[in-house]
Length: 159
Image 1 (cartoon, rainbow, N blue to C red):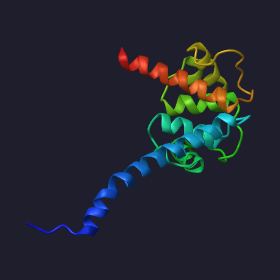
Image 2: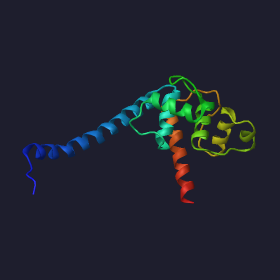
Image 3: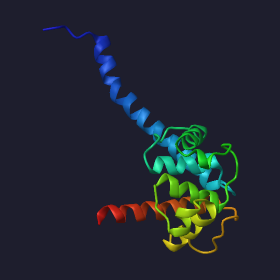
Image 4: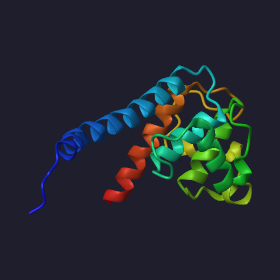
């Protein structure tokens, strides 16, 4: 039987601490990023990308907003913008339709874009209240919209 040195015992006793510290750090990064998103007066392309892609588990929670924007541009070049560009509700709706691979109605299938994405999400009752494609959308409203999208996706999986 091998002798266990004091150094080995010390290392193994601190492993759980390092594991827990890394888990809480990743969680704190996600929470901090979500706080930044919620505080935005007009959600940016990078922030929307982060919320969408973490919601679909395409990127890990500890990614940055710029990483998320780069990944969104790579996956859906038709939505590409600078990471800090403020989005309209139409842009956000179009990103949602692409990220969740939603099939739209006749007009969206003929002319896929922000205008008909807003109309499709209003029809599905994901967008509530005033909703036109050129209006600005706050981070808080964007997160509420994404919550309804996730709820709709969950309900579709159960059926």
